[in-house]
Amino acid sequence: QSVLTQAPSVSGAPGQRVTISCTGSSSNIGAGYDVHWYQQVPGTAPKLLIYGHSNRPSGVPDRFSGSKSGTSASLAITGLQAEDEADYYCQSYDSSLSGVVFGGGTKLTVL
Amino acid sequence: QVQLVESGGGVVQPGGSLRLSCAASGFRFNGYGMHWVRQAPGKGLEWVAYISTDGINKYYADSMKGRFTISRDNSKNTLSLQVNSLRTEDTAVYYCARDRRGWCVESWGQGTLVTVPS
Image (tube, rainbow over all chains, first blue to last red; front, side, top):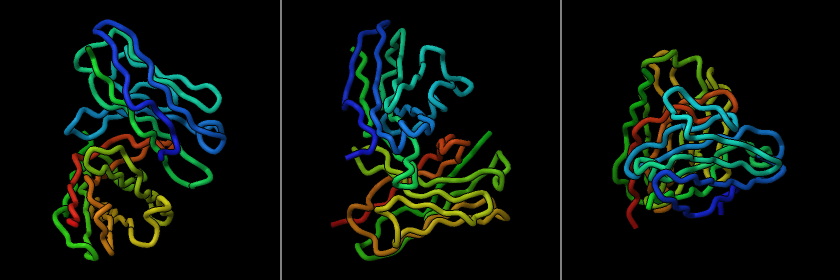
């Protein structure tokens, strides 16, 4: 059971918009710790997609955006493309555990 | 560019030990905290440990405390993870990763597979 909760799967057609949510608690997201998002194409290493709730590293398309509210965070992907099909993980820091915590991951299928 | 290359994985019998290494290049190694993160086959990401720039501060996931030891050699730009008393549930790809401020796992290596057969 992951400390951060994500839906196991989400899907959308090319060109559509999808959102992936990440629910935490008062000891992690709700405590003000940054939320980060990673994309992992099967068989490859994860890649940082969003850091500090809503910032994109160089090279990440602006189709990807992040937000945070209360004890939850969301990743939005607009203009879905086939290459976006991957697993997406949220991550934060938990003060009760004194360490990094990940969500269980959400598998995005592009129909 | 940032390069992180893990090595040391393999098949280890239950109860055995293993030392994973990560060779870092392309950045000032002693200026960054470092993480180990693992991923069991078909499962999600699981944080293992973090070490500060100078190697003094170390943090572990609760389930890793006692059997896992993270260390670094800044003179050799190398990160290590010693794992003792290996269990079947330790079977995973182990990733070395560079920290960004805010406990963000910024850059990842390609991973090294550790298999502990039942």
